[in-house]
Image (cartoon, rainbow, N blue to C red; front, side, top):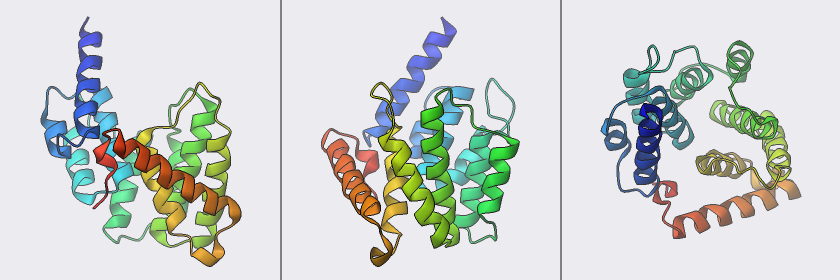
Length: 203
């Protein structure tokens, strides 16, 4: 029953955050912090690429289960890497590869795992200015995204770095795959926003 209550609380807070009704901090403050909620908030902070939210999250939810997430897990390690890059610290794509090797993400679906790894590696390449890796990973991400079985759906928040990655490829260097992916991603984001997912509206 406690697990059901915690799950309901996570869904409730996620709905309010995704609808833009609560700020990141309000969402974090509501109810108790559980490992599930902590992971969810870390992932939102990663994909919105907000340094303040990343700092807040890493300060508040890193620790020992069941009330926090260990710092050496994939999500917190990636969050720290993204924060370091947003703050101008010198790190690189190799640091992402080390994270994947040391703390592989715990995703049951191999299809979603491939989408996420290409997405995140492309995101890190973009943040460090490695255009060659960015182009390659964006293309591989799109192939994996389009190959998802019908019963699987990528996380809504993944659309944000997906668009940023594609937009950051210089127009003259975009392949047909990149251009079509960008148009598709923009259309998906606009569709979600019209349905009330206002957290996708970027400043």
